[in-house]
Image 1: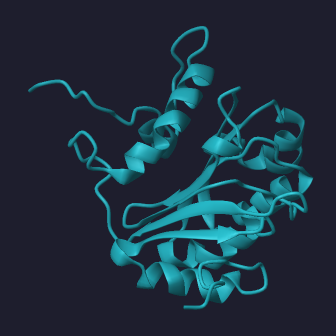
Image 2: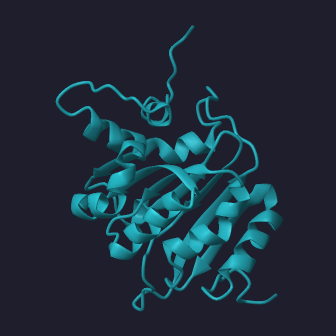
Length: 211
């Protein structure tokens, strides 16, 4: 067996990663990098699997300017419809500098719970979803020898499933929803005008109320 098979290098991520996840059992793939594949490269390699414009949920502790420029491009080109962004410390100045025009379609919060250990990127729309768990970098990391990731592609999903652990999309979004709720509702309940943002914030988690 090729001992580099499950390593995804930046030069081949566009071809290798989509092929790998489509061949993986149940489209669930564990793979590795040397810390040299960026968020932008990951997104451009697999986002086409979701096909239509989608919500992006990005949990990334310390995004730099490159990431905000990339997110601006995602909005400008109509790739994403909404952004849910969680970081380890405040990045309001970069957010408004690059994404201020789209602020009504963005949820943003900073939290001490955000770290490389909780980092992920999630893409979803009404038909499909894709989740990528692992460290999110905007520049190649020379000090990292091994980074592990789990990629799951759902050609269809039930966002409103009421089974306790039966919805993998809801499972991965759990800390993001809690983080954004804490920020949004601090000081009192606020009216949420955007339907997609409202749906995200009020995503239900078990235990569910008995009917």
